[in-house]
Amino acid sequence: TSAGYFPRIAGKPQAYLFNQLVNFRQGRRTNPSMNHLLAHLSDEYLAEIAAYFAAQRPPYAPARAAGASRATLARGERLATAGDPARKVPACIACHGQKL
Image (cartoon, rainbow, N blue to C red; front, side, top):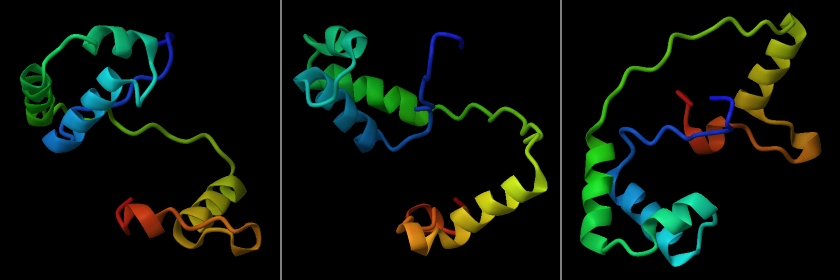
């Protein structure tokens, strides 16, 4: 939306989602709307919320053409697969795996 970034949480692991909800409730993660929304919810209810979103499997939107130059795309591919050792930037695949 034009209102900013909203992460895709559908299909994330239930334990991960529960932990993030608890972190918002406890103030370890900061987002005024989320902190307010979760402030008085029980662990049991947060577990239900986490289970619901973990079970969701909506399709991803179709990929759009990047519209970037070949040089920019090649640089992005190098960063993703090899990083930039001169700048001490690790490759994306180092953390995210070969399939990113």
